[in-house]
Image (cartoon, rainbow, N blue to C red):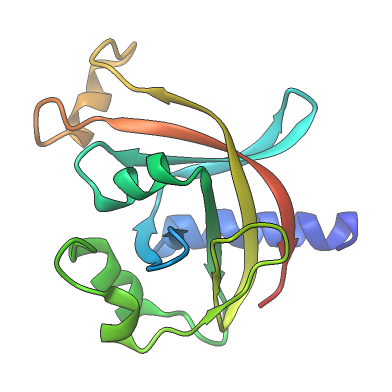
Length: 167
């Protein structure tokens, strides 16, 4: 993918995060799909990185800790996946196979064992290189409003982007 294409994919991904979210896929034998609305890309340690925030209580957190790989799948303009994003944002993979319930199809990744979602405009393939847990020590007190359950903070996963391609 050229630098211009990568820039366009980044812009599309960040816009989709604001509108309805993107998909985070974790696990390879029984992939779990979760909606994310918080994340960013950048350069850390001279590597392209995608950072995702996952609450401690989420099934995806368990899957990420078991296998340090994930994909971020960006819905396309032609297929927004609104219904699927809404479902994956409220249902737990502990109780429901979300992909089967929604008829989502997976496609193999090029560099990692976690698949991407067919029909998305872009798929970031990432290998976790660092993780850190958030705590209550926010510099801005208004950030606490994002935490309705005491102690259910996020772990920030920094995944090196090994590949980015269209689905």
